[in-house]
Image (cartoon, one colour):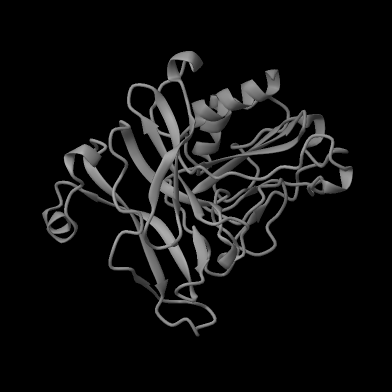
Length: 305
């Protein structure tokens, strides 16, 4: 998260830093959590801060880490499995908010039970954080799920029920015709769903980088709204030959699978279901069969749901 600190007079990046307990140099420099505060992982998580090296730089290009952790130690006696991903829920009046304290949320989990969101409060952004209880907690046994950690506890304020229609966000415009594969390492499957167009990206390597020229390389990079449309800037590979229906999707509300380069051919289909063989064909055309089973399952669920 990035917040303006009225005490320092500069913006501060607050983030989670991690190092392995087996990293002797890091442990020598920063230490380990005391046993009663240690979540029991093979790594150490610390909540850290960074400030601009030159606050007068309009681009804030360079940042300097603060010397100490902003949040101290993980809470003791709770049985947490991790603590990370800080999010600011409330700002004090001095920082433009309405409260007396900063209130922060951290992702966590309770061992043997499920995911959790920890609450901290402080009168200062970069020090003095105090554990203030658990905001929310999952129950794996009741939900019939596995896993013990929640990630990125970002909360959004919604209008109350019955609020005026003017308070609702505007509807997204209908997407233009066509499907794109955003980079050679990406392939995308586009489908007309019951609630509008759907885009399922699949990265061949999971390591695609954003384009320095602003063209966008990954459909999961931010800020981005993944519509079924052509990118405004290269590198993009529009499938201009795709026909369009009334809803902006492919004719017959079928499926388009685009292999590397985005060119139609052996790796695409516009009339059948999204299946692993179709995705395998996309792989033969230059893409990869990575995650084909997951995509096929997702498409099947959307079609039936």
